[in-house]
Image 1 (cartoon, helix red, strand yellow):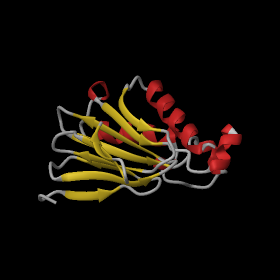
Image 2 (tube, helix red, strand yellow):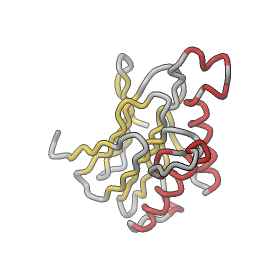
Image 3 (cartoon, rainbow, N blue to C red):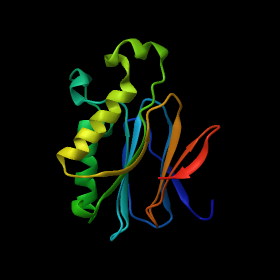
Length: 165
């Protein structure tokens, strides 16, 4: 792929990248939300694969910080600052948060996609980070890619093609 190194960000993972050849990718986002954060000045980025909205849902079990929107955003911001990024320059883009189960329509608590979407937005707002572009909701899965060299973020969907966020 043109000398680029694709690095999958799995369920609940958080990855930071700062090499121009790196591309962070969240594959198969259904109700999960993929969040890409990027500092264009130092060209460092992070991606979080959020599975659930709140760490309180963890029932005391140890989980990777990226699993939940609240801890995932917090951990990503800390990791980016450690890597030389400035919070004031961060660009945030997200995809996913789909309603993948029909029964979710009857009970909003069961619509994990919508809850993940709102939790990611709320966590970003708490840190005064603006979500500048998104492709969330609906009833279909997505793949999200962050190109570290340029900060370009692509979202692709089977049957709907690929577009830049």
